[in-house]
Image (cartoon, rainbow over the protein chains, first blue to last red):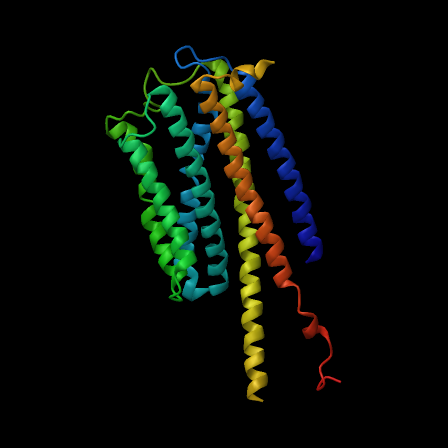
Length: 245
Length: 59
């Protein structure tokens, strides 16, 4: 057991070093190497953080969604597996909130510089804010509820929250919005200059690796918490038995 | 200095700098919070020394 956790520790350290190297290289490409965009100027460099984190903030909700479905399936059939799924679900929800918060904040900073406004209630921005609120409410429910059915209620909420993800993604194609059309796959005029691609790709890779690290680290923490709760529950039962004797 | 434009006085430069700081603060803050919770949970998991000492009925 100790040998296994040692292997995980070393693998984790290697992953963190690789991730930080990728992010450092991506930051250099974004700030120094990538050319300055003709119309927006240097503020366009926010793109290299804003778009990768936005993409990732639409992927982690599906990890939460799948884990919640597994939790609902296993909660009566195999409670130990259900606990594992629940740990994945809460980890993915927190990482979603982190990435969507960055997406909203960097978007507002970019919007103020490019459009002259911090915020507008258009379909993309509103549906993204709704996504953020849904996952914040998921975390609040888990933190504050004391019904004994918290995990089940949270799993059901996450199934409904995941419905917002395709709405966020499609909003700029379904409705006319202030937000620009998709950079990739948005028609003949979409795409970026090839000289900007390395900075974009490396930022996607670096922040995806960082997201995976956060997800696994938070999962490990949740498993430790579950272990700690089980240990204190066992101690409480033993204490009750001793009093009874 | 290649990055001098990033620390200039224009709104674009300020917003770009602010967005990079936000990214690092949010991501780093969350990772630090997990690390702090990890340490705290580790202490909770350590067995109580009172539980390790032999009890009267064990002797």
